[in-house]
Figure 1 (cartoon, one colour):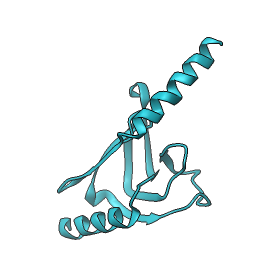
Figure 2 (cartoon, one colour):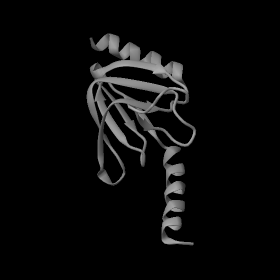
Figure 3 (tube, one colour):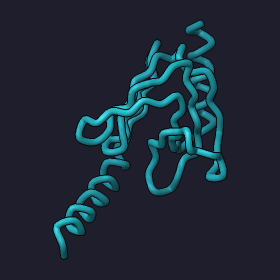
Figure 4 (cartoon, one colour):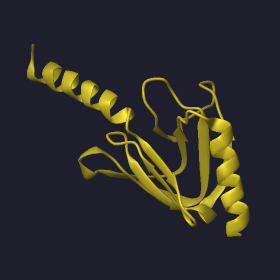
Amino acid sequence: MTIISFYSAIFIFAQYNASRTRRIEITKNFLHIRCRLLGEITVPLNQITKLFKSSRIYDTRDTTGLYNFGGHNIILEFQEEVEIIRVYGLTKTSRKIAIFIDNQDDFLTLLEEKNKHHD
């Protein structure tokens, strides 16, 4: 086994374990998404311009993915580019992110309610 193969196996194992503990938190003014090795983002709720259910057929070329092996099911669009902190502290900016949420309907309803109260 080469060093790269060994590192890849460790990375996949770490990502699997991290994905089980990913956290998404919605506070009064912010959405915090922590997907461990995939990235972390904190964005003001008033920056979210559009959110919708999605499928694998959605064109994600201009979208940053924060999802695991199974794909995404929610797209969030922002007024301005937001900073995503990746593994090793690398950063990326994007106006759209794709995420996977276990209960899409509850997540969308909660975000829409928070945005209504925030405006």
